[in-house]
Image 1 (tube, rainbow, N blue to C red):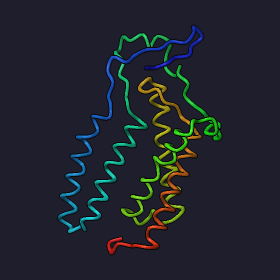
Image 2: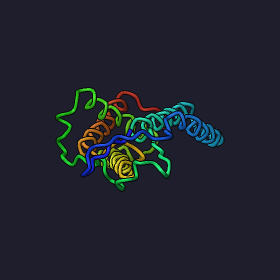
Image 3: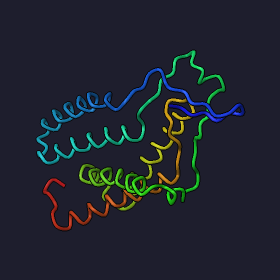
Length: 191
C-alpha cells in the first residue's frame, strides 16, 4: 500500500502486483550451492562453508526485512496521477529513534550484528573497528538510499531514516565487539 500526500489530500493505493521475499529463496539457494562447489574445489574447511551459508541466509533475511516487498503498479494506475515523490520519503533527524517502539530499536540494532560478526570471519579486512564501522555504515546507507529511491517511484513504502542508519551502525559495532570477545577465547585455525 502506497500513501500519497498531495495538495488535493491524502490518498492510498494498492499495487496490482507485489514481489515478496519468497523470490529470494531460490536465488540465494542457487548462489550458495554454486559458491559451495567453488569452496569445495579449494578444500575450504567445513566450518567456513557453514558460515558462508549462514551469511547468505542472513542476506536473504536482511533484504526481505529492509527492501521487500516491491510494489508494481500498472502503467495506467491512478497512483501516477500526481507525479512521483508524493510519499513521506525522509526522516533526517538522527535522534528520531528515541520515539521508536522498543522492538524497533532492538530490531534495528540486532539486524546488523550478523553483518559484521559473520563478515569478520569471512573477510579479514573487517577485523578492525574502522572496517566494521565502514561496513555497517555503508550497508545501512545503501539500504536507506534504496528505500528512498523505491519510495520516490512508488516501488515501496519505506523512507530514508537517519535514525535507522545510527541504530544499524551500532548493531554492526556490537557484532565487531562480539567477534573480538569470541576470538579471545577461541580462534579457529582457518580464521
